[in-house]
Image (cartoon, rainbow, N blue to C red):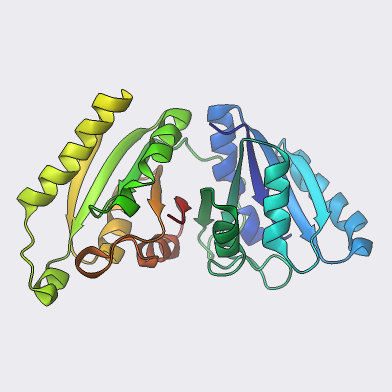
Length: 271
């Protein structure tokens, strides 16, 4: 699926916290790991490239350093496009300055301009830098709200599960408060039928065995992160928005909430 993982870093320990996750993926898949650093001015490149090379060597990775000027997102996408089969993996924010990767800034600009899924990760700020190895991703969790927009991630989520050798679980959320406000009945039977049918379809059409399904209750921005805490070594695969009104479960709020929890990787794209 991917032959290279491109990790933009900014020289901070915070941005480096994604490296144990990407190292676990590289170990499982055999993909190449490349660390990328953007600089604003060419005179900075030599020194920063040396620092990046030292970090890359410690992680068995390639070092790539380019002059980005003022458009870091474009520089990242240009480097990703240079090598076909590249997955961009980025922390949801870093330090201020050239690599201020706040979701809504660099990471969101990469999503908007690139059109391809990226892997976004927000580590625990209190944890500090750690090179401790992580176990492989064991489960891909796909939140769905019944819309074609939310389901549009499924083909890529299926390939991601195959690539990582992970199980799949599809989930839907019943938000009783939203249902009451909209004057619409919400029930477990309908939601169970929906996610069960999606799981069965994935197995029948794509040969993915043992696809799980769950119906959650509550505000999706709370229910999905809570579910992820119960399943460590899991990754979310989701679009950044879904349908409006009753089940607007994927309107960025779930992505943001999952990232705020820390130590949750989100494979996401704009539909």
